Image (cartoon, rainbow, N blue to C red; front, side, top):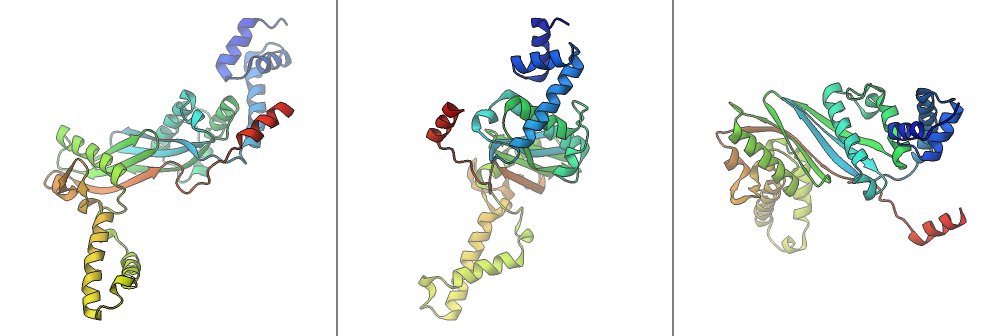
Length: 294
């Protein structure tokens, strides 16, 4: 069967494969478009498996909200260049929506589920994108809230994401604006807890031990040391609690002041892209030489 240029173009558009790969697949499939696409996907999955050993610490944080359900996902790739690719951004948005709609227990469980957007196994969707984009892609983590009232979100340049669960007597434009502002504040100020009630006693004791051992208190009487340390601990804990922090848009009021009589914060999650991951270290000269030798 003659393989026409229009057929190659159609397969390329459908799969994102290179021109020669698309033509070879069509020849092998004797012009059957679906079979050719399957062959490319199979080859793509094989190449995707080889890429899974690489370091992927770039990417984006994406969120999705539908009424009282919200989700946030961190998607990783190898380079910032790919993180800015529209295909990768769309994939990340699709995965956030999948988390919201499927409510998976874990990333592994999610990979076995069918994507609610494209109706294919999520593991296959990821591997198809690996074949198309040419880098390792992973779903690192996700969080999902099903709220009694409403969920809000804020993502800063795809690098810092916040998901917030709030409760209010009536959701209106004012409370929604406040919730959005709190998300922005959390992204900027990085609180660890909603209130002091959430702070484990072990955290407070550890901070107290550190402060008591500081050199500037060594010569002071025990009672004075205790008093000074109590004041320092109080200040440290206030810095780590959302409600005690000074509002980033108006430092003259705390978050507790901002929300008083309007809403209450139930919980929040803050993701920073790639935190705790090993970063990829490229040697440009070695990379160029390897391409020349190849």
